[in-house]
Image (cartoon, rainbow, N blue to C red; front, side, top):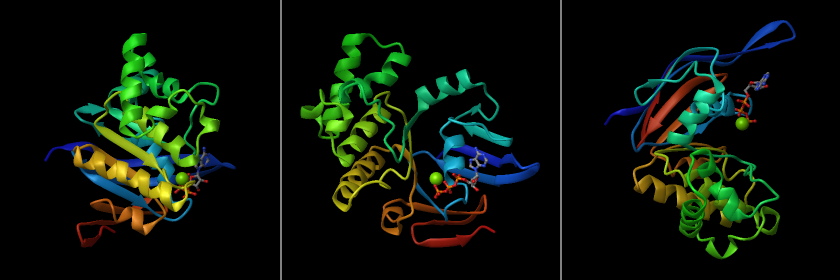
Length: 234
Ligand SMILES: Nc1ncnc2c1ncn2[C@@H]1O[C@H](COP(=O)(O)OP(=O)(O)OP(=O)(O)O)[C@@H](O)[C@H]1O
Ligand SMILES: [Mg+2]
């Protein structure tokens, strides 16, 4: 199976108080099409930093990131936005919904940037809301929804452009047990549809839903385990 993501020696260096700090200290990682990978690691180990680079929300200081056949490590903000819009659906821990507009309009937002007309936007957004079981909540604003419902809206928004890669940074971090189960069912269904999924979590039961478990420590991948085979990388 072909690699959809190839990272080579990715570093992210922050300058703090006159000193260099490596939030990512050289990440080399390949993700195959259709893979479901869980990224774990202690707080501060670099998970969000890595996800933001993978999700084209940020750039590495050095190294190579090939998304499909395209080198994206050093694109401009505008170029990154185009790549993100075409390939990636991103789900955040705090949902990142706009509070003043309805669930439907939140889901339709990426389609505005993609240049889709109003009627088609509304139809496609409604179809995605239906797919996460929230059709009847379409005209409600985020603050009228529960946490689990908000995250389902955010997932519908991440899916509305039909991206082949879904990334999520602790998508169930703010949710109760039942909502967590609902959300994980959605990710499992996406995996069955052969989407490529990378998900950050602190919870081993959630990581167990994935078919590959990656451990990040001090900005490096220190374990890469899949389907019961545990392998020490470093
Ligand atoms: N903009 C920034 N400027 C300076 N340092 C940063 C910045 N962003 C992150 N860091 C540092 O990089 C390291 C990794 O942060 P990151 O947010 O990736 O951790 P994390 O693994 O996601 O942690 P958590 O589990 O708490 O979400 C931390 O030490 C953090 O302080
Ligand atoms: Mg984080």
